[in-house]
Image 1 (cartoon, one colour):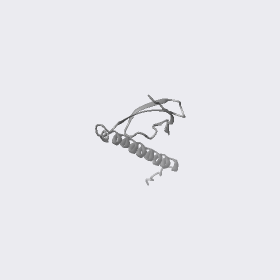
Image 2 (cartoon, rainbow, N blue to C red):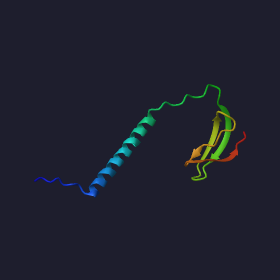
Image 3 (spheres, helix red, strand yellow):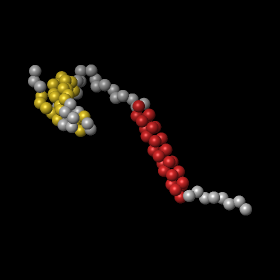
Image 4 (tube, rainbow, N blue to C red):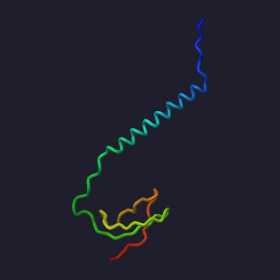
Length: 93
C-alpha cells in the first residue's frame, strides 16, 4: 500500500514565511516602480517666486542652507536628516 508522507511542521512554516517575504518584496518593488512613473508637479506661474535671503542649519548634522527664492516671504523650513532645519538668522543685504 502506498503511503503519502506528510511534510513536517517546520517545512510548512518555512514555505509560508518564504511566500510572505516574496509578497513583501513584490509589493515593495512595484511601489518603487510606481513612484518613479508619477508626474512631476507643475512649476508655479511665472513671476510668483519672491526673492528672500534666509539661512537654515540642520540640528542633526550641521549642514547649512541659504534660501534665496521662495513662493512666499516666510517659507516653511526645509527638511534635512528627516527633521525641520533651524532658522539661523535672516541675512540683510
